[in-house]
Each structure stands twice: as C-alpha cells, then as structure tokens.
Length: 358
Ligand SMILES: CC(C)=CCNc1ncnc2c1ncn2[C@@H]1O[C@H](COP(=O)(O)O)[C@@H](O)[C@H]1O
Ligand SMILES: [Zn+2]
Image (tube, rainbow, N blue to C red):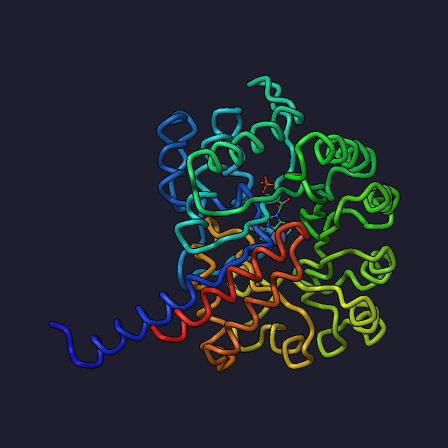
C-alpha cells in the first residue's frame, strides 16, 4: 500500500525526471561501457559458450569495485562484442537508449579494435559505428551523434599514432561525424609523455582532444605535460586540485584555457577514486564557475543514465531547477560540434518555458 509520502515522492520523482529528461547532452560515454543489460542479454545469447553472467558485466547499486576491477569488467564486455554485427547492434542500442533518456546530443567514444578470430579490422570497427549513427538518423531517432576515436594508453606510442591517422581519415571522410580523439584506458599503465607526439598531431590536424587526466593521484606530472597541448576537454580531472594532491599550477592551467571538465559522479564513486557523492570534485569546479559537464562514462557498467546523474548532482549539491537548467545549457558550448551549437541553443530556449511550467 502506498502512503501519502510515497505518492509525493513518486510525483516529485516524476516531476524531476520530466524536467531533467529534456535537458541532456552527453559528452563522455565509452561505447562498450555503455552497453545495457538488455543488450548484454542479446550478446550472451549469441555467445553462450563464453558462460558470461550479468553480474560480470555491471556494478550494481551499492556495489563498489577498485578501478582495476572496473577495467576487468570492460574486458568481459569486449569478449562479448567482437564482430561487426555486435558493434552495429551495440552502437544502435546505446544511441537509442540515450535518446530515450532525453539526450539530444551525444558524443560517443570507442577504441577501434582488431579481432583476428572474427576478421574485424580497426577500420571496419569505426565504419560500423558510423553506420550505426547513420542508421539511427535514418530511422528518425531524435538525437545528434558525433564520434571520438579513442586511444587506449596501454597500447603505447605507435598504436596511438596509427589511431590518430585513422581518426584523421574518418574526420575527412564522414562529413563531420568524427570530431575528435579521446585518450583513455587504465590510468596506471603507461605515461602520457610517450603519447604526446600523437596527441599533438591530432590537435594539429583539427581533431578535438578530450583527455582523461588525473583520474588517479599519481598522474600530476603527466597532467602538467598534457595540459600544455592544451586539450579541448578533460575527462574526470579528479586529482587536479591541491586539496587532493594535485597543484595550483594544474588548476591555473585548466583555468587559463577555460578547459571544460567532463564529470562522472557514479563512475568515480563506484570505482572508488572518490569516497562519496558529496566528496565529488564537481563542487570544487562548480563553485569556481568553471565549465563542467555531467556525464555517465559507462552507463552500462555503472548501471546509471544521464537523468540519474543530473538528479544525483542536484540532490547532493542542493541545486535548483534553474541551476540544472543553466548547467545543461552551458554544456552546449562544450560540445565538439560548433555547427550544431546554435541549433541546440535555440532548442533549449524553446523548451525552457514548457519545462518551468511542469
Ligand atoms: C569501467 C571503468 C574502468 C571506469 C573508469 N573510467 C575509465 N577510465 C579510463 N578509461 C576508461 C574508463 N572507462 C572506460 N574506459 C575506456 O573505454 C574502453 C571501453 O570502451 P570502448 O571499448 O573503447 O568502446 C576501455 O577499454 C577503456 O579504454
Ligand atoms: Zn571515461
């Protein structure tokens, strides 16, 4: 039996969800980490011999893992996604799910993978993701999608350089669907100094750069170096500020270039680089008025979606609907699609009066 309070809560949640559901732009989503439960089930049915259970591909509510364990989860998902057919299905499902959550603009990122056993090449990998984006568009899914080619830091300098060349080719051949390069992967492996030439080349040929920086405490030197490029956006930046072992010099560099941060609350809490929601560095940067964009990182692995991340930010930091609106609106200026920014701003202004009347 529902009490008055339950009803009130449902109403409140409905109200919030409706409000927040119209506001989204997602700028930091790894394709394979975004695979939902229902897509995992379809993949498992295709590959029963792998004996993979859902508990191995996601971190549920209340659970936490070390960052290392989180990367193990991604390896399990990679086993399930190893053909062009898989990539196509995964990418289309992920795009539709973001659209269903109210995301109007999505930047997906993914690391091109070669699979000897299935004959998948890195080039085909990227082509297949692009094909998924085009198919969703043709099917009328109400979302604009752009793609960042990802460099996995664990694969070293040579692969990074090859990946940049691939990204450049696709930037030129996809009519603007490939907009940039992401640097990600296990932050405890490798050093950014080795990847600097590749990242610089990417920047010089017109690819936008989003770099995972200072995701773990030991990366201050690397961040110092990579911030000089400078990147166009920063993923996480959890340990940049002096209070957590970063430095004022790092903060100053970020401030000087006004480099937006992509912040993923649940990812950081479940991966245990941040001790609780209220301790999240969102507050540090938000209070400074620095451009910060709320993102999901790996919505499948972390069992979340963008509405929920906005909701968590609002309730943890006591943000009003007006604050949320502004946060969401400002994210438009952080996208890597300048051609869409005006259109998105227009959409937001048109939506505004209807939202505040809910
Ligand atoms: C789950 C987890 C480890 C979260 C921590 N945050 C992360 N930090 C750095 N790189 C990441 C993170 N989450 C996903 N990635 C990158 O995204 C890849 C998975 O997506 P994809 O295969 O590129 O399409 C991973 O192999 C990794 O290179
Ligand atoms: Zn990430």
